[in-house]
Image 1: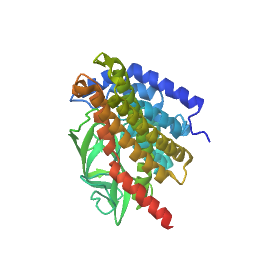
Image 2: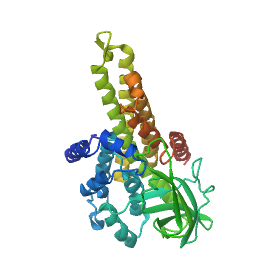
Image 3: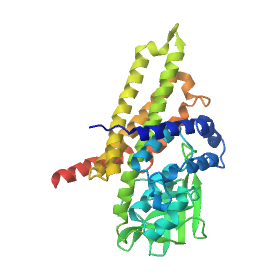
Length: 371
């Protein structure tokens, strides 16, 4: 059985890499990092929209390209490789997926074409502070028309125009759509390790909102959105991991010590080999997740948890070992290693930490085996 991408998907991958090499890269990421007033690059965001990437998995009937989730996985890997400073993950992996899963035809027709065109930025809010959110600890409340409460941290909440909020409605949990440009919403920008992916605290006081999906089914829908996003984030992490390995390998070949390339020393060889193995483990799990996502297979909850855990571990290890391979240079601002380390730490916490996803995997396997 061939789990590799098709020729067309590989062509899309090459096109994306060339575009990002020209329009993104460390120079653009550093420009955002150096500017405390912005958390993403508007020019790059417009370029991504013009390329049609925002609508890669959105049906043509709603203004997208209708390509599918495999193509979205290809794009996610290249965006991760380029540490692109754009709110792509929040808008596409979370917000758009929530709408495609649970939105009514009227809601899809109203927002998905604007999303595909880059006219709106979306985000997804479930966390309310330390600890993983659960149906029992959610405090935000929705009555079918207005929303009250607070969410923190919200990825890209500082620049988003719309948010999907996980909130209590009666005795259950629902998903609520909120426009952030209204008097009932207050947002506070948060400082994080990676300022090129903005975060905010969102506070709602009688904010106008509308339900997405059926009342009381919000938690099941949120879990489904997180599973889909987990696979796509895993591809970003695989792309970042691969970039770290290539940076470390190139430096190990060109940096000389004792009249020899440092890559000839066993300690460096072992680092690079360990990075390669971790990436291949993560990649195989991510491919499993991509298959489950694209076919809507029953295995998606298991594949999502496995891909998320493996990719988080791989990206952190590769970003760390890339710094170590560069030695004292690796810790400096002028070398790009820290861009990947920042992103690795941030992505490891988005949508739940590796520990949360490992626990999910174990629990889901136990439930399946007990059935």
